[in-house]
Amino acid sequence: MDKTVRTRFAPSPTGFMHIGNLRTGLYAYLFARKNGGKFILRIEDTDRERMVDGAIEMVYRTLATAGIDYDEGPDRDGGVGPYIQSDRMSLYREYAEKLVELGGAYYCFCTKERLEGLQDENGTHTYDKHCRNLSKEEVAARLAAGEPYVIRQKVPEHVVSSYEDMVFGEISVSSDDIEDGILLKSDGMPTYNFANVVDDHLMGITHVIRGTEYLSSTPKYNLIYDAFGWERPRYMHLPPIMKDATRKLSKRFGDANFEDFVAKGYLPQAIVNYIALLGWCPKDNREKMTMEEMTEEFDVSGISTSSSIFDEAKMRWLNGEYLKAMTEEEFYKVSAPYIAASKVGGKYDEAEIARLMQTRVDILSEIPDKIAFLDDFGEYDLGMYVHQKMKVDLNVAKQAVKVSIDAIKDLDVWNEESIKDAVKAAAEAAGMKSGQVMFSMRVALTGQPSTPGGAIEMAVVLGKEESLRRLEFSQEMLARA
Image 1: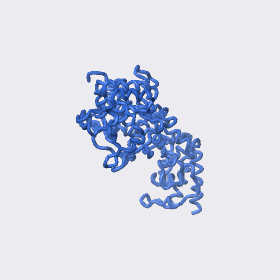
Image 2: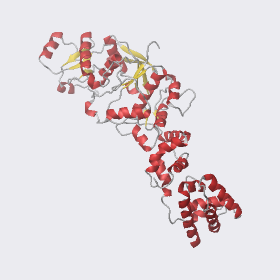
Image 3: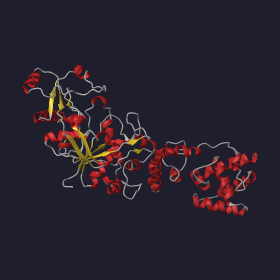
């Protein structure tokens, strides 16, 4: 590439960060980093009616959490700011008026009532170019009289506007199918169609990365570049992310909010990894990748032209792989808030609980439910002791629980190795199979048909005093049977 690559992410502060929007930002980031370029954050806040309080802060927070670092933005001046559109208003008017001078735009004085009366045979409202050829004198007089106006794009007639998309190849649209759209509204606010062209040019954006909803309207933007005599950027349009086979993920309906997934207990790096795979595949088909690995592998040739279906079950699996790959210390750090907020928070050794749960959860929010049984111990169904394959019945269970109590009551060292050795030795001395004793001991310690760990792991988590209390409680229950 001849010059420094500059990509941008330009979210609108109209709510939460939608997964599809974040993917656009991620790909722009990866492309810039892969090519030694710059990644720019720009806030497009010209749609004032849809703005949501706190949404700009949410953008900063999301990018930071996701590990997507930008080189320039509202808080990192790179010399081409401001980076918030509402702070660039004078620029839009200046360039709209300049475009009129260059013959690429014109003043339109049509009233709202007149425009509402325009529609074609299909009932579609299409502007009829009524003000396109007004004389300079008439325009000047009407401006001087203070008539309200908009500035419209003067689309050349009977030409084909074409460009080469990096994903979809050549795209061509006849100018006869492009309306003379509004560039500057009567209140002085620019439309997206105009502001993004001016901003991308002035900020030196070399590659524009966005969704396929802009694929067919890009020729319209290119005509603005051409009218100014500006170099066009290159384009990379991304296929949509679908909720299912027929419905797109929709920000409007609350689908796929990044921060909601983080709150559910997904790791940010796992979410970002999964999002990267929604429409792109590395050459070696790898699935689990760090940001550095994704940057190294990212290539436009791996971007699909087909839509992707957001599969939370797949993201859940990938998140589980991230959790399993952590060190015990790393997992304890991320799981500690969930353990502390559970019913058993502060009651037992939380580091041991974390060690027990690391390979048994796919998302961190599963932890409270999976360890709730530690707090719910009381009368339980003695039928859980019956296990035909292990040849355990209530009589065997009575003996096994007694063996368990005798094995651990005098232990000075309380860890998996010491407990296991003591229980195995006691079982052998009693002429029992260690499996029978371990099975019965687990039921006696938990009163549950299944648990995330075996007897020894449960004993370590519960501690010696609580383990003995529960075993003795279970011994009394069995004695009454």
